[in-house]
Amino acid sequence: TLFRRAAASSRVILRPGVPRNERLRVIELAVLDLERAVDFKPNFADAHLMLCDLSFLPGGDRKRGFKAASAAIDALDEANDKLRASTAYMWKAKFGDDLDQQLADFARAAELNPDNLGILRQQAEFLHGKQQYEEAVKTLRKLLDATPDDTKLRLALAESLSRIGEEGI
Image (cartoon, rainbow, N blue to C red; front, side, top):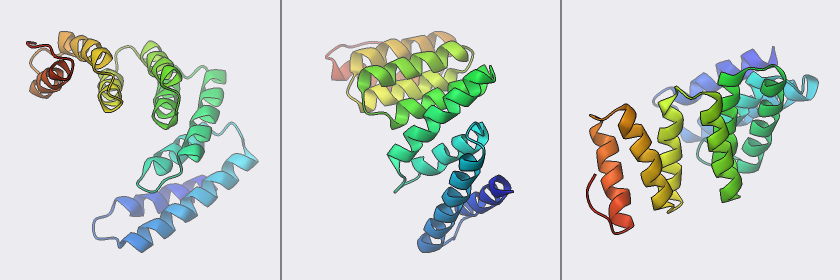
């Protein structure tokens, strides 16, 4: 199938030593297969999620990633697949360009999969990257409540606190 061929092609991307031009060619072929697959079956959530993965690679197409994430959300919401829908909402947040909507998408991802601390980690990184340090501090504190011995989180919190002129963890 188109999806299997795209999945096999995309594994080449992860192999060490693959020349850049070969990697780009494989990505392009995988994207074409996935786009044909979703043309044939618009609610094919796995294909949409793989398009998100490929679109997030260096040189990827953010608009294509956003469109794929939105389509995956529609398909997964319809299937009532909350865990995978949370992944699609995270992708949508990463590809979006409206800060309020991106924050709403991260919140929805966390709501759908509340036990996944990875969502909060990605949200904290996102907020820090967008220079939303006060919000990053809130998210990092939630993470530290769940994993108080995580040194990397403590360092990230200290960095965010220093950006807003506060001290202490």
